[in-house]
Length: 117
Image 1 (cartoon, rainbow, N blue to C red):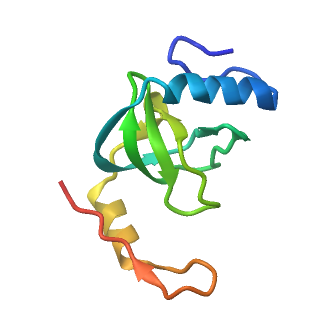
Image 2: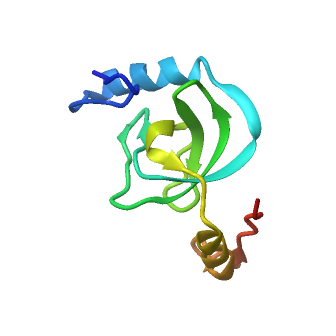
């Protein structure tokens, strides 16, 4: 089911995925919010990974996972991002994301304000 990094190996049924995610989120600890880049992502409904690294916001963590949500997408929360496939943003990525405008449905557009380290 998982390798030594805690990453999923193989396809899981919906019930197996729900159990897997519940196991991770039961051990999570609240942290100061953190913007990160990730590619692999697991939710109770299934694998919601991206084809390329993308921005997510973590509010919790465990030993092997960040727990949060993609910045853009369908609004899933308690998404588990393996730390082994996640990373800090570069200054160039922060500048790029902060320059863009985002809009959700017919709501007014907004800009991100990702702080630099």
